[in-house]
Length: 402
Image (cartoon, rainbow, N blue to C red; front, side, top):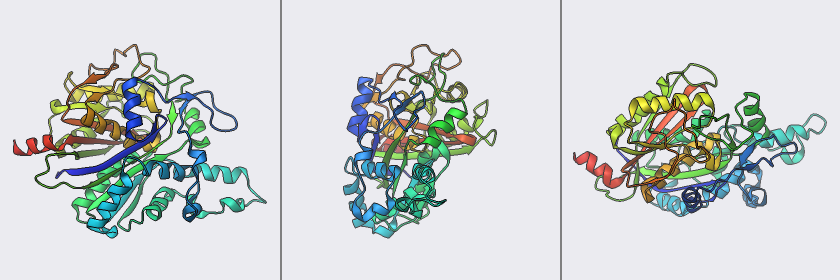
């Protein structure tokens, strides 16, 4: 596939706002997880909560979109020069030629929960009688108005693969000639449906999550938002970061459990590599989905071991941020991009005793290097898989020349 240039990228998580906060916390092995303090009756678990969301109301002109999810989207959007890069893309291409593709798992369901708890004679209270926030496209609708973009506007809701699949959707829109650039991203915030819903599946740990550890017993949930701006790369580009490939698959095996042999996960990773024309041995870093649930980690590690050599450095960063659900794809793509940019390939926080069922690719300690290519895996409920391949522009040029 022709590479797409990444003109700007950012993430806001429990580690802080913007890429510098993410990079510093990763390097220092400083987790953003804390004991759950969300809601009136907090579940006994650890969470990755973003500070300051409650203190950051939307501008008056956007007040009809008020909800926690859109507040976090607004915060995340205004980091790392994304607005300036977006303005430049609009100036060059026009607002109707810049697509908006965003992913979310629960959208603004927290506002809907609040509305139901405050029913007034069977009706939503007046301050929550805003229909725009009570449907899955709340995030997309809000961002479309907030940015002024008039190109294709798509909300992807495929559980935990949502904001990885936005890259694939944007690539198809651009390569089909329906857009010249795309703002992609994802946002998900904590709410009762998330915390108690996952707990009802017996997937939530009462301790900070330990991906790929032999004693792992469940995930830690988090919230986050992030964005990236994509556009066609010039044929002679030799600088910057690029989306080089994507792969998608569906296990169609079980509503919440992955395929036991990881066939869908392998198919997604193989497709991403094939689109990029890159061999498995050329990938330096892989950010694993790695939720710290027993089944997910074993299956993913097996799929990785079936495809990649032992030299691969693969890790899960959910011990830093928690599992941010529909925002996991963009957050962990940012980690992969940071690895390409600064050479830090993070380990797996909180984990100490490797599961013997996992291959040598899964690393617990940091490493430093100069990876030419990095990947991100995002696997959602229903076996909804997406793998993304990123690379440095100089590496892409070398691959094309070869």
